[in-house]
Amino acid sequence: MPSKKSGGKRAVEKKHLQRDAARGDNFEANLKRRLRKLGKPASSRPDAVFLWLAKVGQFLITEALADIGIPPEMRREQAIRCLSPLVKALEPARLAEKLAVYEEKIAELAHAAQERSESDG
Image (tube, rainbow, N blue to C red; front, side, top):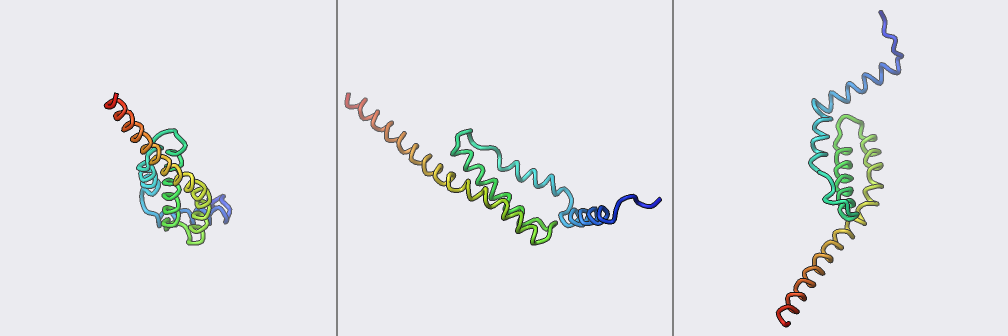
């Protein structure tokens, strides 16, 4: 009995089979494993979340550019789609890192001041 699929559907299936063959076995499982290695944000604080989002964005762009299962022009399009949210997350992530350093220094200074006041008193 002849296939009831249209020529377009058969062409898409063929393209997907070629893509999957180029990517190799366990592509999805390997991708998910590498993504899980990024973990979750260190805390629910916005600074930690922005830092985590920046790491995820960088990972996604790298993966999009390295995916041999799709044509180069699609890789570029995927990377460009990932880039805009990444750029939006990077500046707050950079500021959050600086803020964390400043908060740590302030806590150290406060602790040192408290120790001095206790030793003077």
